[in-house]
Image 1: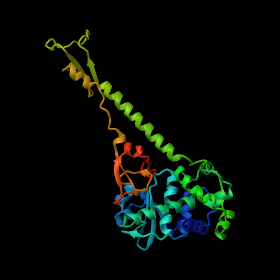
Image 2 (image 1 turned 60 degrees about the vertical axis):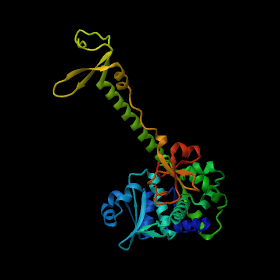
Image 3 (image 1 turned 90 degrees about the vertical axis):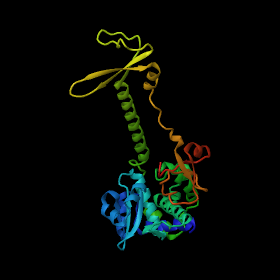
Image 4 (image 1 turned 180 degrees about the vertical axis):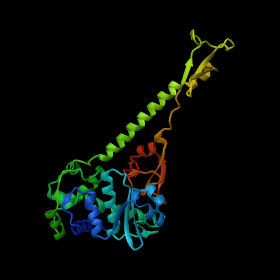
Length: 328
């Protein structure tokens, strides 16, 4: 299916769903699902469905997916995702359904053929982008640059870069486009823009604080006393060999006690050195022959594909690849 046809299908779907406002909200998507006779539910509220369909493990690795089960179309998603990402992934799943994508083991949009799966993922991405920011509506608003499209807060940078060409040539021509432009009101988003960046920033800040607390705890629990240390309350054992230091460790129980253990001067150096963590840049990631992103092995963009290439993050970035916004 051509991109023009995919965008046209998305426009028809917006009209049929009686969408009147942008940005799209979860409430709007729920109403669309009800009108379409689909079930939209989170993983957290669908444990029985996940167990019955054998997709509990899939829910651990994918932000959203759609299944046919018991005569129903069911769209499942992770409730813990940032708001903007929930909306985006649900629109992506709507694309799989509307575009009549193939199914594998009842999962819509999946295929045993890796190239078919990849093609369907791209089509669903294009469908979602058009739902989030209809080209004809953006054109009517006078969007004349990628930067202006980004300022609407409706799309990510990657989406805006790819969608802008559609916006430039998206003047409302068809009856569907004209109806869509007349019906939709655009309200500049204030609440959810960049929420995913805040989510990542909070996680990173929490990680740094935890590591700092662990470092302080380790430093407080291990004290190296030099050879020339003198104290009226504590002194090295008279049998201590020259060139040795004393390590004092404190254990907490119903009463506090300390134990003095002699160690060699060479050992004291290693004891006071904090082990370095593994370099994140050495993590193995995967790229596709025609893609521009690198992915974790369980990312749905690469899982099950036979044409992926593995390399470290540093190698991927050196070759111009950027992290996938879904799995990183």
